[in-house]
Length: 552
Image 1 (tube, rainbow, N blue to C red):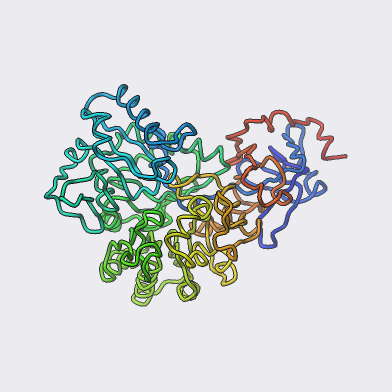
Image 2 (image 1 turned 30 degrees about the vertical axis):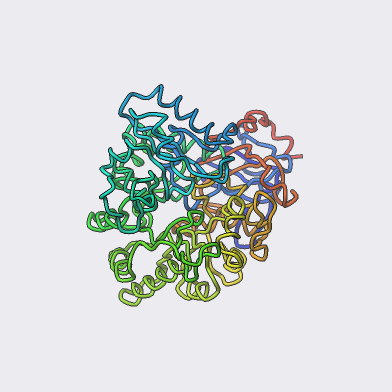
């Protein structure tokens, strides 16, 4: 058998059981056929084999982001971004919203995303009245970066049927002033429910999905675990499958059965419909059933066992009682699903572990790989229970980089066990990293940087003892992600027989200074043996018909 493509003279980080680093890898069709030295690879060279000289650069398994929101990320690209370089104040955001209003038909929604009060000089949220000044002809929603809170104008409230007499939904808050008037701020389920009215069209969602997939590939991501969107979940999954079939979404998708709006209804609907975790193929598979148990780490609205450091009366928001959680996810487990939940605070994590224990006691199952999405504050007693239950954790190391100072303010010493990657490794708990994009940047290299350095973007140490090595962080973004979706036999490492999903970096990841990891660029992304991203024309500029560079 001769290879179609050979990468040679590189730092091929295999992420196999021995963590071997070799110099060459050969690909035939969409599979890896050889891994090793130049001597190992030579016999796979034919006259038409394309040989790509890595010049000492790193080649890794394609990154697997184990928790992001494909649909929301893509839809955001159609709206107003609050994280553009020119945004320094609310005034800048308002100007962009006015421009969007001028080009948007009256009555259509205007959506802004990525807002953080800490990134504008006013250090506050916009008000309903300020949004009303921009337009009274368009409903406007400004979505906080956490995707758990929004600020809207009066027409948006009216469009959603929210008045001063509207009661807070379970697990949510419609914020009011002291006199009972609406401020326009919607928190948790109040925010989630808004998107029954503020949703995008099917055509817009599909366009956004393609844009998102293209962005992920540019970052070296070849597989994602999609953690759900607003609105009707089954409709979103249907559109996603159509986009995959049309080759508009090129990344591999493990679709978590979860919605940001009434997640338990979607889970119930899917359980009744019949398809279970694992149904699908190498491009699209049904993932775990998921609900929300608490809120946002920067809201802050996560459910904690002890009050927040900055507010002794605040323990966060909890979505379900223990009995409700046991019933919703227990039924999914009983019917063959992998199960999971968004659980950030230690109180929420404890409830989810209780749920797992009951489900497994009532209906034992080996190799269930039940997951916890985020697991923000995970003290030692909860880690021990995770280990005993064989739970897979999906932490977000980039949160430390982006939110470090806020975490210290809100949670104090608890940052020592926030997204505790070192503890997980020492306890044998498999943790697969995710970005939670668009909550934060999707860039896996920034995630690796954050996991290795455990410092905020301002250089503040945040739980430094939880730092891990570069190789450990790579594994969490590759093989562990494959394990979390029951796919470690076909991807996640560079081994013979596995899918040819690779990322090539701009330099050696093993030799760069830890403080410079975030500056490394992606130079090539391959999925299924096909080069899908190659801005530097590596695959075109390194063709050797006589393969001299390998055979010498």
